[in-house]
Image 1: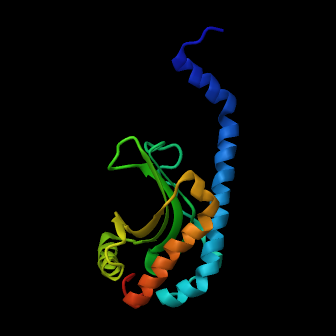
Image 2: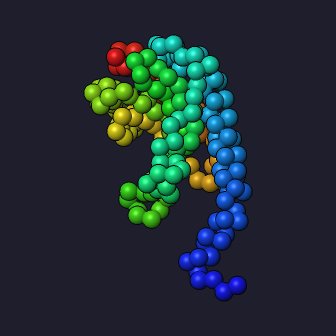
Image 3: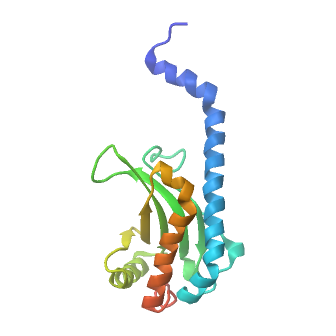
Length: 185
């Protein structure tokens, strides 16, 4: 059959859609399992440093805004677990893919540990304290104060240690700022 190149993608997609979806789900499951394991391993240290209760039974999936079936498809994705904190805030641990702001067309990927704040006032207050304690190594993106560790495709075999690096940054910062409780009101 003679098919135009723009229609060839439709045929390929129709043949391989379920296979591709299954591969993405399996990959996401691996990222989830590693993230949950890291959160559970660091729970005692994080609980002590943050000064707030953390229940491993309440770990849930990080919201997949922009992951599939949105206007952000192919531009931005986050996969991993998150942990509810006091006052409607969250401790997040995920892999974040996005298009580079510096080099348009280049993809950037990193392991991220963040505190997702319920409003901008909380985020701004927390970010000022964290930025000072971390010597300007933290980042603020909308409602999230975060640390990141760049990841290449080859780094995924070391995802557990990369996650550990960003969680340990939060543990260190929490100790320096006297925990999270006073910031997450």
